[in-house]
Length: 75
Image (cartoon, rainbow, N blue to C red; front, side, top):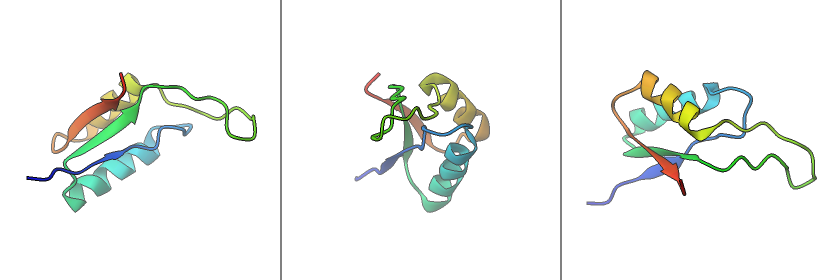
């Protein structure tokens, strides 16, 4: 059986985009969502960008749904 997972958007100011992606993933039948554990704060052009901490983001996702597996990338 093939399982499908996707990475959540974590370079944002709030968890709202990741929560929206998670709800869409659940509706689409995706098996899991994953969050980055690295806080890459510099964009390609050298400017600082927002980054959500992985465990806090996964906690926010876990509070929103129990219908999808959660995971970390690399941690």
